[in-house]
Every structure is written in structure tokens, then in C-alpha cells.
Length: 298
Image 1: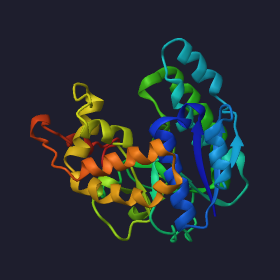
Image 2: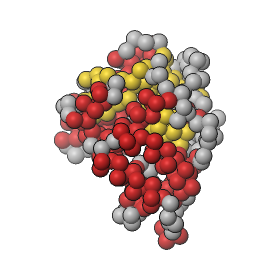
Image 3: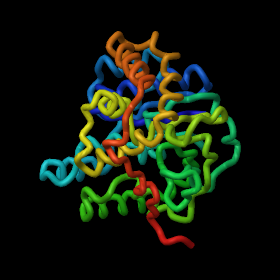
């Protein structure tokens, strides 16, 4: 099966690039997935690394890029979101019947078997809570390509209209949840297991949903900004689930020999700091926001 990842040039540096390398290395180790990268930007040292590790890079044009670029120039939208929106290009890029899409901040823990069932449109897992099927996370999707191709023209119209009208209040995951409401099916939790859900030997795809490695490092080193809503939310997820992060960060050590010296030292520093006591009391972590429901319960 083909695995589609998506990235723009903005993500070829820093912890996003590191997460991408870890996703690729772990997929290579634990699966036979044929990895494709949907990409917008110039080729560079990072894209060369991907190709060296067997990833086919597919240069893309996002059909509504000009809209996002215009709104970005007007200070109404963030151009770096292009990488997230690229997931909508999957159905424009392949004629396979079924494919797997994943965000780049994942780690493959075992071969993602269990995709034999053919979704009507796509399968996805919950956003925050394991029983929170009201609103799904689009970070891992088992996709029926032909159904997406059939619905894409109307989906693009919907995307254009809402990006224009709602700007920062509208992003790709909201688009999928609203446009395809009632059409998607449940994906096994193990296929999009969140780090903060705890240790699970049955997990196949681990998702660093919420705190990424850069945020984890900043929190541990006392450099994290807790004084805004986003900072409090990301920090609270980590602070209330430290044992889970400690358990899974150790998995990253399997891949450090194939990373650069800087990346290797970065992970080793996080791993070392995770072993130390971390006082959460002064931060007053609060994860009530994870009870979010987008739609009224049926």
C-alpha cells in the first residue's frame, strides 16, 4: 500500500523535518509501505535525504494556493499551513483504489495491518479522547481515492469559500470534519495512537499529536511560554502525561544513528531530561479543552 505524507519547504527545517525523518525511518523499519511525499517548494538537502531513504517526492501545485497566498499577503492567513492543506491533493495525485495518508509527526511501531476493510470514503480516529468520535483527527486516514475524486470539485469549492470568509477560524481538519460529516468510518485507535493515551504494545502508528519534540524540549528546559492559550494547552497535555512521553521518547533512540549529529544530540538531551523530575504544580495544567465537541451529540 502507498503511504502519502505532505510537506512544504517551510517544514524542511527544525523539529518538523526531524519528525519527518523519524516517520520515514520507522516506516522503513516496520512496514512495507511505498512512501510518497507530496511537496511544495525548492529541492534542498532535506529532500535529498528523503530520496536517499527511498521516498518518492511528488512536486505539487495546490489548486487554491493563490487564495492562501493572497490572504497571507494581506495578513489574514498563514502561508505555512500549505503543508497541512496538501493532504487534499492525495486524490489528485493517484488512481489507486485505497491509500494511507499520515501526518509527518508519527512513528511507526509495527506494520499497520488491519486495513483490509474498504472504507466508503475514509476511516479516521478521534481527535483527543479515545471515545471522542464526535470529531476526528485527520492525521491518519485510510482513504477511498475514487470517492474523494468524485467529491473533490465540491470539496474544493467549500474550502475556497470558507478560507476566504473565515480565514484563521478555518483549517483543513475542520474542512474534513464538516464536509464529510456522517460519511467517514472509525479507524482502529491503534492506527492513530496519541502519545498521551499511554503505553500500548498494540499501537501501530504513534502520533505526536499536540506537543512535538521542539515543544517538549522547550518545556523541559523551562523555555516554554505558558502565557497564551496555545502554550497552556500544549504544555498541559505534556505536563499531565509525563509518564507516557517518557515511555515513547525512548523509542526514538532506535533511529539516532541515521540522523545528523545535531539531531542525535537533540533527542539524547530530551531523553536525558525526561528521566529527571519535572515539577508541574507551578504551571497549573488544565486539559479540559480536550472535551471539545464540534457537533451536537446525535
